[in-house]
Image (tube, rainbow, N blue to C red; front, side):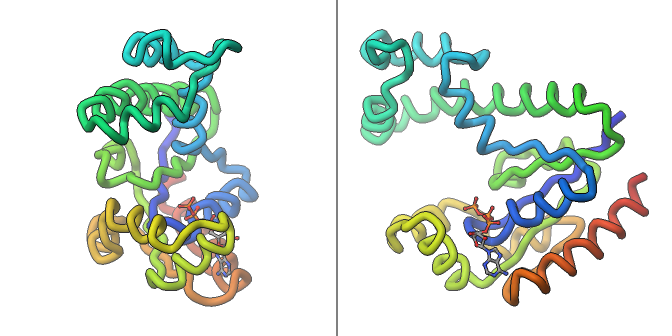
Length: 198
Ligand code: ATP
């Protein structure tokens, strides 16, 4: 059976960078955000449920979802947002379990920004929290996405704090120095996790 290593951290902390290091150690990485984006495409197993929820007005003439329409609906109506999450979140978990089962590897990484908030840590043999000062994370995210500072701060407020992540995680790793220093530390941590889990 595949043992799951859960990676989490605040926005811009370095989760994807850490996941990439695992991938270079040939440990498959399953990305919750990528599956959540896929959930909204006609190829996903929950597409018809989403269409049923919002009705035919949510479809564009080409048969794909009108994301602007859905965004406006869930922004205006909290119950529509929880109904959408009630479809997408279980789908993401089902899909992560299916991809893990299919990977045939002794270890797999689950990259889940809201790992503890969603309770998905219950599936993991161990968890790693990437910790980083908030101002550094905001600067990185603004640089990467061209995002607005207030939007980034609002997303941070919707997540648990680094203190809480550190308390809940099996391992923590800080990412406040250079990228090279982080990658070196990540490789050492991956070695330690492999020894403990394999
Ligand atoms: P998100 O939650 O927004 O998906 P993330 O936690 O996955 O973010 P990354 O995408 O790994 O974070 O890193 C955010 C940005 O900061 C990327 O552009 C990455 O290349 C850069 N970055 C990561 N670590 C460092 C570092 N130590 N020094 C400089 N830039 C870094």
